[in-house]
View (cartoon, rainbow, N blue to C red):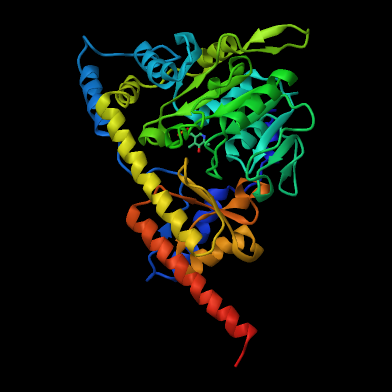
Length: 422
Ligand SMILES: *Cc1c(COP(=O)(O)O)cnc(C)c1O
């Protein structure tokens, strides 16, 4: 008799983005005359940088000729890309890495979901709250998250990020084995200063914890004092794995490429009190379950580090960050409390009058025809917030702000009328 992995059954049936899609679809079906603007998607909209297109086109031509054709590549990626990453993303920040410490992948989602393969089921897990749902769900699938009770997993320690702590998580008061950190943060758009990040590295070294550091939005950092890599902090190579992605950096969400850094010196305990290097285990895991990212894709990724590539990426990110700046200004002007948007393409907006996330989502959909993401979908501390993304077109961002402002004015007038009837 074949038995199912019952840990999958602990997952709730509903998936945040399918719930949103359904409500939007229902609304559109009954309001065919309205144009709905979406600030909900976590996907980029600008096309790939031309440098990546050219490099991939060239790589396709190589595949058409038996002399330059490439079949299976190295599971951990081609040296040309690994070297380019080390030289551009790490060396200029004073971080030395060897080729064996960088693993090219088909994106950071796979890596942050799969990394649990090499970690014991018995580890205690800590996560900032709200959080990128993949960290939670991938732990739930192997039984490490416990059960979902009142929107909280019993096996996960939540590290709340809210208005009270300025969206900076406090260190756990107890020992946690594995901690997920994502900075610049999805969904709040906030960042950690070097001092704040150093506290986490310090905690991890003292408690023999492992930090899984997701830097998918590293390219959005505008403030030069903000760390781009956790390895800018002394000692981090002994306690942290870093994940990166070309998805948000260079529009690779559909192309698929990212990488994971596991320093050779990073070890965790085994049950006999010994130490085991995670680098070798991850290499073993990837060689068995992954057959590498396509050659064409890796040539495309390499090209974003050329002079033209860098300029084109900067321009695309500048476009999104201009959207973020515009939206943040408009929303603050309209009286909203907003964080994020300065070093990340996300705005984390407090709902007015303590309205629930989903109620405010519906209000925006029905009154302003604007789609956002309810904050509570990212965890219990997200209740009372919504997430707006800067990935739309400038025109749509402007239109959405205009509509939200009108909605606010109208609702305000309505409230005054109710309070002071003639
Ligand atoms: C988008 C995103 C990723 C990864 O995306 P891939 O396309 O799989 O590389 C990883 N982490 C966070 C927090 C993200 O928002």
